[in-house]
Amino acid sequence: MNHYNKTILPNGIKIISESIPYVKSFSLGFWFNVGSRDENAKNNGITHFIEHMLFKGTKKRSAKKIADDIESFGGYLNAFTSKEHTCYYGRGLSEHLEKTFDVLADMVQQPAFKPTEITKEASVVVDELNDINDNPEELIFDKFEEAIFSGNSLAYPIIGTEKNIKGFSQLDLFNFVKEKYGFNRLLIAASGEVDHKEIIKLAQKYFNVDLGYSPIKRKNISGNSIIPKLEFIEKEIQQVHAILGTTAQGYKNESRIYVAVLNQILGEGSSSRLFQSVREKNGIAYQINSFLNSFYDISTFGIYLSTNEKMLDKALTIISKELKKLRDTKISGRELSKAKESLKGGMLLSLESTSHRMTRMAQSELYFNRVKSTEEIIKSIDAVTSEKILEAANQLLNENKFVKLIIKSKNVLLKSAA
Image (cartoon, rainbow, N blue to C red; front, side, top):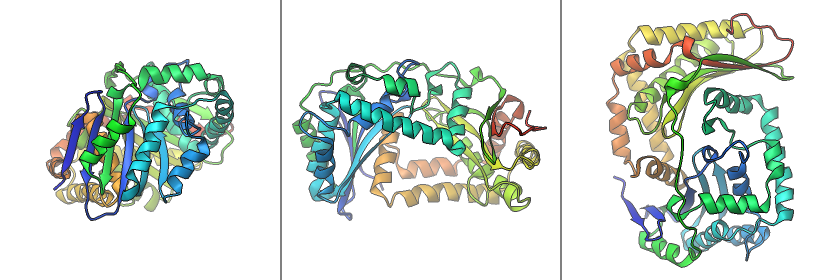
């Protein structure tokens, strides 16, 4: 049974924690409810850029001292940006919790944003952008969401554009932090050998700069607004990479669980229908899987594969047959049970890591305003029926409503991709 504690401080900071007495370490995350979804065309990429810059020094710590203060105690510090959140997190032995808390609090409250560091880091982030552009396996997902969410800020890539990255000024960064990094957007999550009352005291001690209040204004998006299309991107590559997919229910919709189980059956793992039919039986694609990438109000659901140009048409034909089977025929109780056990097993195995526990806890709080227990999640998975899978398949697996994106070499001509 999970035991969580939750406190909202008078300044708006939310604290959640889970004490695990049998470990000797902690995972601590400072989650800001801000991501690339909160940007516009002119500043796209600024949330991710700020994530980088917070490690480049504060008013009292240099970039080296930030690293030294954590690593000298055997700890670890990192961060990531998503389309809806930014997380700064640390791991370490429980006796060093306060030091990690101090460093993270300093980073998010007192960033220096030195112009010389901004210029240097812009080059680093542009290199990161070029790495993505050179990697079709990664690029295609950005381009797919750009196509499927056209007209909404969810379409913006997290990393931004080269022009924007090179153009960010110190004032731009300070203004964005002032506008978006209010205490009401901050969630502190901790898992491991931690004491909730101690974390409250640390927050009261180290959050001594008033970050104010930041209203959250996001334009919700409906799956009904998605326009089916076929798009090609030409690059000098050996393989053909393709995504075909659509939108599904987001986190706020309880029926998303049906799509999650359907996704497990269709293309998650080497026993899934797509892997078995496309790769194992026909030896066509090295990479073939389905995916469910979720946001608060919407998800993307689709199929990704890479293969050689001569085999793409055959692969797409096999995929169509598999989609038709799921639309036409109820899955067996045995296959449904296997998919459920796989989903539950993946979740329960992840609970052996304090970092995964901290992340799951924080995301649950951010999306549902409460921490869903593992028992509740398992119950929702167990409640999925074959009839609900059939219903979800007929709602989602209509290829005439898919957005299709293909990255190919210039000289490749494809017959059936349309």
